[in-house]
Length: 108
Picture 1 (tube, rainbow, N blue to C red):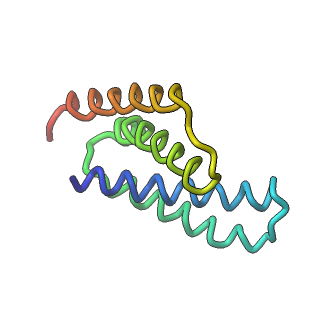
Picture 2: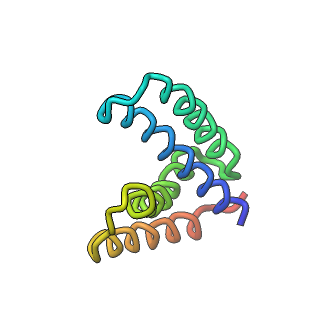
């Protein structure tokens, strides 16, 4: 449960931080958007570093599926673009991959 919470925090922080850069670069927002964006990306990295896993690569691979699902939630909730069936199907496949990675990981 702690791992899932950290992944959710990391995903929200990464998407928020990247969106701050997107807003500055692509939406002509003020460069001040970069300050909370940087803070958010630091939170993202810190949350992933707290995941109790022996290998960083496995942590990052498993996180990828959570990030995809969170990105679709962002698409729908923030950008007001409703994901289509293939978006959800792809996210489901990725989450199945996350389960395989986490459940198959060596313990200890």
